[in-house]
Image (cartoon, rainbow, N blue to C red):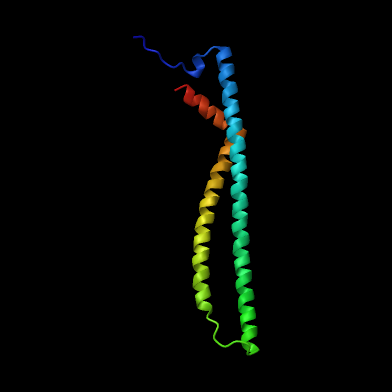
Length: 132
């Protein structure tokens, strides 16, 4: 039985390198476009979270304002217990902040990969791996 071995990139003929380079470029462009798309989608979701947090705060302020007016006008009875809202809001903020942190980390990884492709570093890493 003959032992076949894979040839390293540096051992390939010029035309073989050209084909391999073309396939590598297609893969890198595919990855680049995929990373750009998902970076955009994640960034859009991060923006939605920020809007959600601002909207939640505005709703809470409006709620307290209206509730206080209704109490002052003797249209309702009761007490306004802001502590319940505070606890709820803290829990929401904690959850949303942890989700935002995760999304930010994911976006950072996409952005790093995009920069590596743009700079040629990603291609060089692949070539280096082919030569091992």
